[in-house]
Length: 365
Image 1: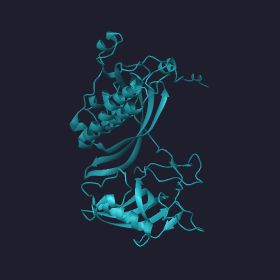
Image 2: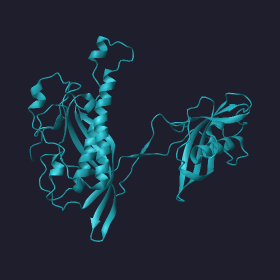
Image 3: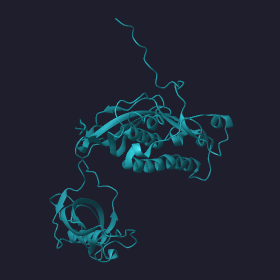
Image 4: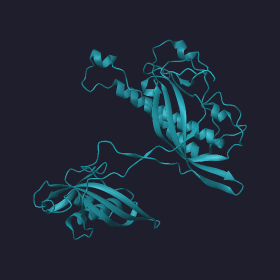
């Protein structure tokens, strides 16, 4: 029997086998100037031709997240809601943000998918130890890349799962290779706003510690019960359906003045330009009891009603879309008005505190 390997302690700060990169020295960094100025770290030189148009668009958006995340983090750290900071506030550990590591991981997966023999440098910007790749470049491309799971393994060390809609080039052309999930590990140099364990505002750098690993899709959840037990008629003669339909016609189609159908003081404005030319309310439910009682009292001003509407809308190119709207209606002068476009449908009263997961499998082919 072979010797048993010693378990690894992922919480131990070990010396990295490679330098972190890239590093961006903050002009306001008051640490040792040599900490940033003498580092010779790999940059993010990547080949636009190798990454393709989709990856370049993703790169632009994700670099915005990488840059904005630390800046927003620093703003939050500098802000004191009470106007003064006590000793406890100054010594409290800052929460590390996974925004930037997730962005770098997403860029890494996009570069790795598109790279091949002769274009390894586009990947070594993220993983400097990369050996030669066996496949030819531009055999694969990601049309969409989204981080779906971000876990901090230990301080400044992150595991990120990235969903990629992959296209593969064959002799007959590009084909859809389905949805794949890749897990990568990212080590961070920097403060908590950058996802690292250093002081805020210092140099920032990111490096992958291994190649992407294809993994299964994250577990899905059992269907969620929403809090709209009563089904209502959808015709305009119903006071609730009429109010919802006229509001959506003004909001989505630009038909009529939206202010006629919303409560005074509401900040809602119509979508401009109007994205749709026609719509039909297909399903309507409210938070009223399902049976055994009459509807909410419309004659009493200020009565609120939560509504969930399913809408079939036709766009300017004759395409049909099913949309869902969670709305709050408020009664005034004997009619219903829309007082809020809710952020999310209300959960049912019997919904458990935690949803139940179900197993899921990748849709890759």
